[in-house]
Length: 443
Image (cartoon, rainbow, N blue to C red):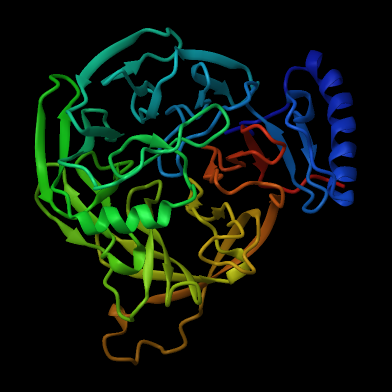
């Protein structure tokens, strides 16, 4: 596949080149001098080369307040040509070749993801799940969201939706922070929209876990709207996601303070096969922010043994149970990780001054090249096949996020051709969607 974010047509290149050169110079001077950018839209460059890394960065969105999706939600059409994002006025599709932006859904909605089979935009508006046909702006109502519930995932063949229902409420839980055009749309303990991170989130999570509210994990048939509950629990169920390739495989977590929960689990869409993926072996060990590899064969997750001290990106192969752990330095730990479509690279979005890796964590978009530790045992160790395969992640810095406010998590994803990494950032003030080129620019 050709470079998805190739330069715009020749007619626009001269204007962009001149503008880009001026903005790149302004960016370099400002970062060197420590000058803070103003939040005016004209202060956000369309394109520049990061002076600290040598990698080209482009702004993909036009409207301030636009955001890319959460790191494990698919945002790309099956042909690899378009990226769906949310904007203050709806849902937009960005052509990754020309960077042209087309409105897909009008009005303030909650985008779930892009369908992996059809490229439809699945979203929630006023308590109903809709699917918008690409290129037509025609939407079809699929199902009502259950009372006290949320729908958060679409399976690989788009035959099922998945979500959770929370029965009851946490005593004295404050309402979620108001979501506006400049903040990230996360969810609180009831699935309501709010910011990714905000003051008091830690205490909220403690109260929510202690409440042990009854919950349901359910699926909905997209053709009929019929709903089936597949799991009932008093554990806090969250981060529900379908395998990108197996329509019946679900991944979810037991939410809460990570040192107090057995977090990562799988279940089949018919309710069978409930399985815990990682078992703690030391006190204060934590793991989470789980996601599937693009081929659906491996579950990857952030692992710390113990919390805030030793950092790994851990992988579990679903078919065999084989485990691979890649070690990384504290300064290179990221709130979220992701893997390239071909499985050869990883990316991370760094962490802020109050992150689990602070102090010392870096505010960067990272590229990671995995290296396995050579096995010199010649198979002589007993039960060697059951041992964890260790490795190391070699980091390269792509974008300096020193001025990024991590109350908005960048949430990195690779473009389908693997040549760019998309993220959201408020580095210049307003939130926008950006992409950084994996290959360094020529100096």
